[in-house]
Image 1 (cartoon, rainbow, N blue to C red):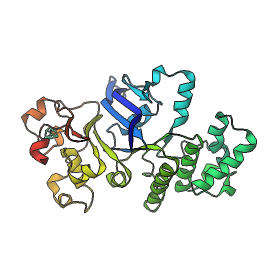
Image 2: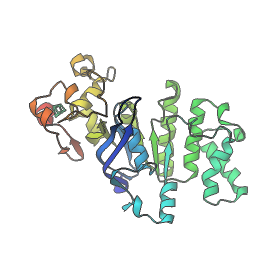
Image 3: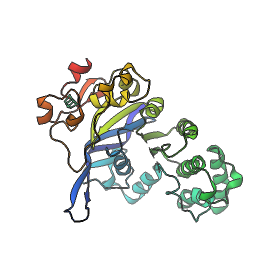
Image 4: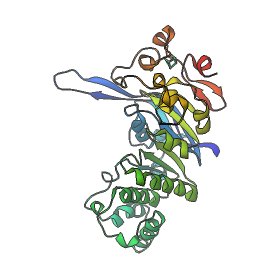
Length: 324
Ligand code: SF4
């Protein structure tokens, strides 16, 4: 892996105003000071429970959503400072793959036309577009004879292949995949993950994969970021995270993987209670209401991200005492 970041986010803050009937609007904190970078050729995983801010982070990094604070840089230049031509390059270079490929495809458009859209934008002559679409369909394991079909004529796994084909047509540098297999049958999930990894290797792509499934991330990622209530609680090389995590939340997520460690038989290690509402972030360490190790300082002071080994950081007052 080359450490030159292609995409970097610094101190990203994103809040949403949520209103429920009869009540005054409240602010939901989706991202609260998140920093990260994606190196050339790197696969970076983003883990955490639903509601921890993973999908918002994906959209902010892809330039689909603006943060209230902080910045996203593409090849060292802030998105807000890119020229029109550079911004067009960024949009082409950074492609998203969504959890539900059906909702990202126009149901009235033939799949050949959907896949060809980035080719049209890139000015590829119409005569060559069909040839190129057929080639990309073959690359992702779709029968090019189906080019004139509509999205509803395909299975979930095939639709995700169409989504990947559409992303590849733009000749991206980075794929940002938001829960790319969670809506698929278990039997299809491995096929799609393997396809993504094959594409990454064949086209020398960088990748951000957002998933609540840590085992998927362990299988494919170089590094993993663990998020909790809009904040990063641990960053580590994938192997280090599983060999010796440094945060109680990560420990609990790993313990919840059936049969993965002895701790998965230890009910005390498992998470208690549900994720608190992001409209009311706990004081001090935001994980303290669910942490079995919490002491007084945890309720008072927010722990900073601290490096414990090369590339391995965690935000916990007790990391050293608990994990060595
Ligand atoms: Fe648990 Fe305290 Fe560490 Fe937070 S700082 S994870 S509450 S031990």
